[in-house]
Length: 382
Image (cartoon, rainbow, N blue to C red; front, side, top):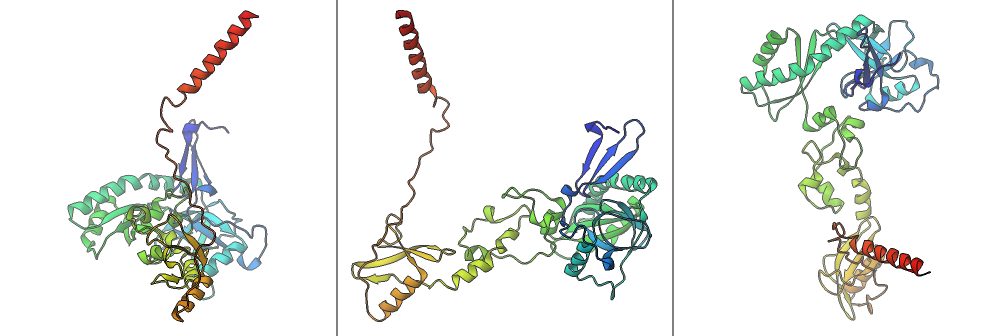
């Protein structure tokens, strides 16, 4: 069956496509792997391990995932829509992982079926279940806007970032952000009277909110919090100082307004390199003068010195071991002959002003016209 482009909807919050038949109104929902937050690539696909045959990873809205056991006896595979057990009622999700890779995920998340009871997969979703699920999803945006109004009327210092309805439409999770403790007992009563559902309030941080919303970072890739990060560690400006980065809040902050998570990725490598670089607090003594430290290449473990304090016009590179040897010689009262070795070539400054001028090609056009005229004159003379 062929569908027009207008009938296809991409639900990136749940990682699926919704195709509606304009003639009959039937909906065809399919799992879209490239639109899956916290996506896990199944490197063990096709490898059979019988102990994990009945365990499946099921995803819901945004980054909410869980491991379920198949109690239906049906054949289930990745991409199937399944009805699963919930605290009250039932929920509907999409199977994102099966087979041996589920065992790896269970180990990473500390899920042990021998000590804890896993929730069950009841059955594959039927058309009635899918229709009820889509009706509940259609209420989420309107419910979130109305919920923000109710919270503002009570004067609560909180921000409702997202709303997720359960698959059967009887319960909703309200994700909120707040700096301190919030007394939302009256708010829950107002939500229950307004929406006629069971209410669950779940507090999240600014980083988790960015993971729920998703987006692209300044690197051009998907946000790490939406792609694979599940545990957020504390990030301080000392990580930027360790990597010799400029302490510019606009460059160091991510879309959540906090320090970027990627600042912690290479800190260990820089700390290891720092341990092998000597501390230079005073100039190095040479027979032809004093050499001042002007720049340090941490990963290359090279230090650049100049005879002029704070000048980068003429610098000389020394390795960490050479600097350590010179420092020990200075402590003994000895001075090397000179620092002058191979001069480090500094890049020339290129002025790009005028490169984008509108008339930058005018002279070339005039030259071409003169050449064409001279050719025509030569042809006429012949």
